[in-house]
Amino acid sequence: MSFRIRTTCLAALAFALWSVRAHSDETLPSASSLSMEQRGSIQVRVDRTRNIQGQVCVSLFSTPQGFPAEARTATSTLCIKAAELKTSSFAFNDLPWGTYAVALFHDENFDKKLNFGIFGIPAEGFGFSNNPGLRIGAPAFQECAFSLGEEEQNVVIDLRYLL
Image (cartoon, rainbow, N blue to C red; front, side):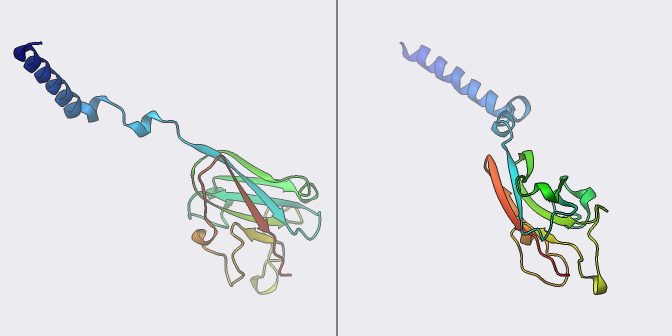
């Protein structure tokens, strides 16, 4: 190949590369938009129910907003009869990888709310992901948060009863 042809080919290649680079933001999708979003599931097992009355309700949160008491701000909420917990767990499927926290309570009287006794002490069982220590007031989202970064994440929560 002659010098002149080689130079012309190199110039054309350089122009083509410059053209693609100069317009890449406008015409080419990014690598992240080409790949599918990674998704997985969270399996929640509840331990230490004191009886089989009522139901256990679990709320999955993906942000601190409303955690842990406002189920309407949760990503998802599920309830299972307490009698079925020996053979069941809660499954939250097809979730994008990210940070989550779980709050749950044992709704012994099926009224769909955590009941409180004297001095505002919970009269029904409750629990959180990461099983944080007891204190006055609910734990923060960050204390209960965990990462979903694989196909399946298992979470075990111990129910706690104060009355």
